[in-house]
Image 1: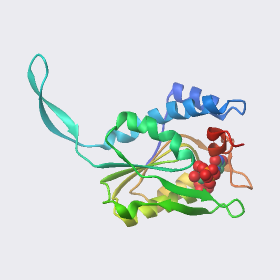
Image 2: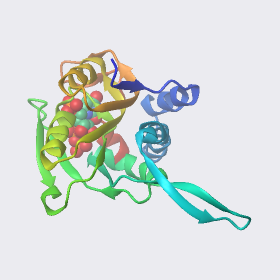
Image 3: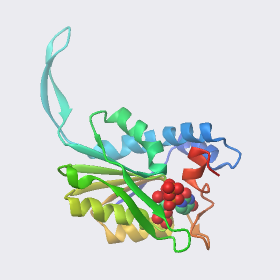
Length: 208
Ligand code: PRP
Ligand code: URA
């Protein structure tokens, strides 16, 4: 599909394998999640535009380039927090807006519990961060929240996506770009991604 971008890189496969492994400890899990997000951060920000910027190097004058857009980064709590720092490493001036959402354990539908967007003006481009896109419900709700707020250019960054979730969302929102490190084939009866990596929030924050 035109708006789905799955990273193809041997190092990405290597780190993802370590991330999925059940014996990986939370401290390593956080470091690997951050490393993988760096791949997505570089790839997804290639759509940013620049304006000319005259500067003086110690040797000569030249016309450089500076990013134009006001950028927002939207980590979905809790697990999206692990992706914030690597994103800010490449776009240090981005604004970070936390969105609180959890999946109801019985119904697997998202419940929103934190959102302060109304206090700010909408950004020009938004990057949604969540390591897991399973049914896609949490990201679907986040996309509608951002669109309602006024964001017209949206990209989603997830480490692992389910095939059915990402394909459903990409059809529902053909204007949104989806970047992921892997697309896994199925969801189980509890709507967990298989093979996936289990519960991302619990593995990140040692609450298993
Ligand atoms: C996880 C994950 C996503 C959501 C994905 O969060 O981080 O936000 O589930 O599932 P979906 O695509 O089916 O909506 P969870 O609800 O476990 O919340 P937590 O991060 O607070 O543990
Ligand atoms: N949330 C997770 O953390 N993992 C899954 O596989 C599905 C939802």
